[in-house]
Length: 318
Image (cartoon, rainbow, N blue to C red; front, side, top):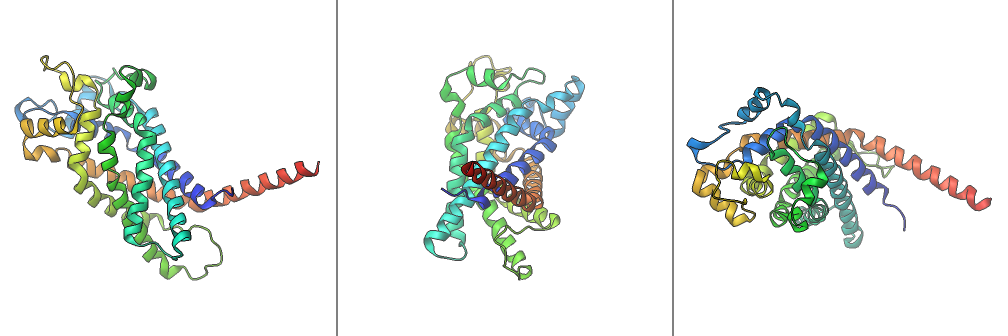
């Protein structure tokens, strides 16, 4: 079976972009996650805003703990983006070949993106759960990946799987909007059409399109995002100062009820600004980096394929 070089180039450049953007924004991600995971009445809140989380790390001399779980998060980001971009590109090409169409419509694009997202979630859910538990652990008390996953039952590694599958609508909306806008921007400049190599946006255009498309998707799906963080959060952050509850809630309905009872309607959008800031910057950086290294990745993969083909031919002659 021939290797789908375009899908492989998409997946590799997307994974590298995810790795870089995750590392750059990780301290912000840790503060955001700990802030979202706390569910208390307004007069009992440990963190009243995002800066309180940062100040806690500074005042306790645990600044480096803002990076707790970075390795796991990077692994999860790299794997998830590789699987997503490969799946998205592969399913899109498969649809175009079977349908005979030259371009993919919005509805079909949503279905393709959702399918790629669902595959990604199933593969990376244990890493996502472990990363969330590490980030929401008390500063300086985070555990390693294996210890975090092996503490409970293996099924607990898939905590929040249902809501994660639901949230596949988020990247579906984002990447569909990005792909359609990208197609319109490149249509005027694409006049040669001689080489079937991927086309690239400028860094600024990719950044803006990534930011706009992600912002809308985040606002729509935010209540589900916060519930997911609560379900996957480390135990200590839920039971602190609440000795009557030996175990945190692990279902969507319990998370929704806890938010409604303790924080009211506005609680469903607690930390929305931080989520938008983080996700917009992350997605924009990811797509910008992906677009800028796409052609380079394509050339390197073609060179690698040629090298392997030549080597195989020499072995056959020997």
